[in-house]
Each structure stands twice: as structure tokens, then as C-alpha cells.
Amino acid sequence: MPIVRDSIKDKSVSFLEELKFDTTLDKRIFRHGQTKISIEKKDCFSLLESLNNEIDVIVTDPAYSGMNNKLKLGKGRIVGKYERRGSSEGKWFGEFEDSVENYGRFLAACRDALKDSGHIYIMLDSFSLLSLGGLIREYFDVKNVIVWDKVNMGMGHYFRRKHEFIIFATNKNNRKIKHRSFPDVWRFKRIHNSVYPTQKPVEIFQAMIYASAENGFTVCDPFMGSGSSAVAAIKNKCNFIGGDIAEKAFSISSHRIASYLEMGGDILQKKSANIDGEKIFWE
Image 1 (cartoon, helix red, strand yellow):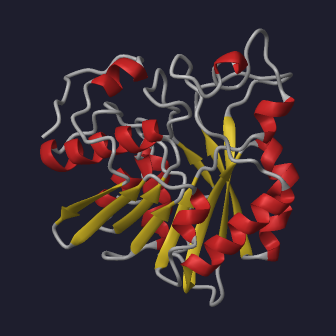
Image 2: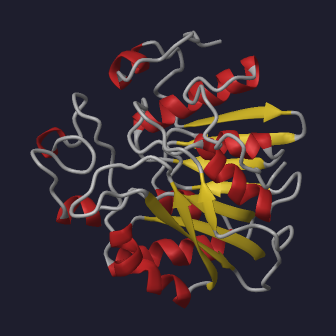
């Protein structure tokens, strides 16, 4: 069993030094009751193309390259410093080259991995929404553009950013969500001082999965990052298949999932991202 610290500082390298998992492994499987959580150190294409009509719901936040390549804020960029990109000193993670050709291949792989009744949620920033959002219609039936209101403002180029987008789409048979009372604006607090860059709150993925999945469904995230989607799948009693090309992501997710299953607490997100006094629609 890995060591679990009471608190985690914003020092990802120090944190990784405490992991007790064999980093030569490329796959880990966890069991939780009747559900199975499987994560792999794989790029999105290798993972998705190994699946064929097996997935009920895809929830994912690709590491787009577009905004980081186009926007420079002050002395740095959106995540970390450019000169430290890919090094152990910086917070950089592997980006997904979001050319039309590459993104089309990704969407086709998602479509083939999903069951005909499958749902997909793809997170996008403002740059990728404009440059790639329309391409999703060529592969899926787009139903909604959901706005994630992060409550607290972040960085900005002209106007400071306070939101991101989520495209929700269905595969071939237009299966319905649980019910039609869900709003298309979700208010969850952003994660500050995270161990992993761009870590998303579990509640974002919990909302997606709750709206689209039943107990025992299989959820996939081919860009699992810190494993927030895996924790959300466990909370929704779903099977989970996740992948990430980065060893840092694989190690952190392994530790987080194992600790959550063993201890019942989330070592990377100590506080709820819910807004006090607001109704949470999965309750």
C-alpha cells in the first residue's frame, strides 16, 4: 500500500518521489465491488483503438496545443514556462496536437470505441471551441454546449477567463440522459494549487457521468491526467478505462485511485467544488 500523506503541497516532483508503485508497469487494474477500474500508460489513439464498441460514456479533457501555441501571457504561457516544457522541473505535460487531421482521427477513434448508444463529453477552451468544435458534428450528433462556470476568475488575454466549454454529443441511436431538468451551465469551483497541471474538479466529471450512465456502465477517459474522471466513475458505481501518455499522470492517478479505494478520501481534492447553498443535480 502506498504512503498517503495528510496534506499535499504543490510540488509534483516531491510527491512523485513518495510513490511506491512500480513505474515500469504500463497498466494497473483496481476492483471496487462489482466495478473494475483499469488505467494504462498509453496515448489516446492506442487506448481508443484497442476498444471496439465497448464504451458507454466518454468524458475527457484533451491537452490541446492551440491556446498555448497562440497566447502568451506576460513572461510565461498558459501552463508553466515554455523553456521547461516536458522537463521534470516544470509543470508541463504532453500536449495533444490539435490539427484538423489529428483531431479527426481522435474523434473517429472515440466513435468506434463507443457503443451505438454511447454519449461523449469533450472539454474545450475558447480557442479549441472555435477551431475544432465544428468538426465534432462530422462524427457525432451534437446536442448541447455546456458552460462550466469556474466561479473564480483565472488568467486572461483581454478579459479574464472564468469558464470553459463542454460539448455533449450522442453516437448513433440518440439515447436520452437521465432526465431533462439539468441546466447547461454548471457552477463548480476551479482547483487551485494542484499537484497536476489543469487538474479538474471531480464534480465536473461526476455531473457528466451521472447524467449519462447507469450503475455498471463503462466510462472511458483517454486523457485521464490526474484521475479526477476515475474518482467520479467510482462514485457513480461505473467501470472505468483510462489512459495517459505521461508517466507523471499514470503515477499520480494510480496513487490517487488506490488511496481513494483504501481510505475513502481524495488525496488530490480535499474540498468539494460545489457552491454552498446551490442544489447539486445528482443528489
